[in-house]
Length: 244
Image (cartoon, rainbow, N blue to C red; front, side, top):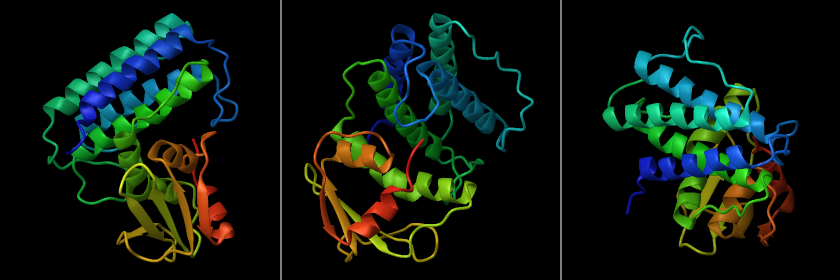
């Protein structure tokens, strides 16, 4: 059954804003060196306003928008995050997912529906970051995490590599889930990840539950065990690509 990304996005924003509001503003965000919980709130709220501009104009934001800046006061920052997210969600709800639009990801077709999934996954991982930084219980639900793994390989990893002028290792890498019947195999021979058929062979394989695998791909600290098969060097090279 397809995920309702907007419903999940709404819930994660509420939890994220609560963590920003009630957590220590200077708490360090483990996976984002140099960032505090306050910085994370500014980041996500800024992303939401950037997406609003992209959807409204149909092109890349040019920096001329008149959104109010992020406040320095943390209770006010949480409300600023809520306000921007609410406007973005209303816009996503009212925009036909198949409507052509601009986005910065090397994915076709260029349609508005991509933003629903991207922002749901953005909020999910950063909600985990915020709760983890605030000392709260932090988890990502299994199906959402599995969707995030797929989105990582197909959407975000290619985008990050292009933006940062990096390339994939010239190898094949697989992840297998232990709590779902799911497997991804990616080939890095072209310099960008190409998702192959799930039954394809791989030089290195990472196995674990969906949440732990997703967090590890994104460079987050994990405590649950992950199994490795094949070439450990290949696995390490692919895991070194994620983060932020």
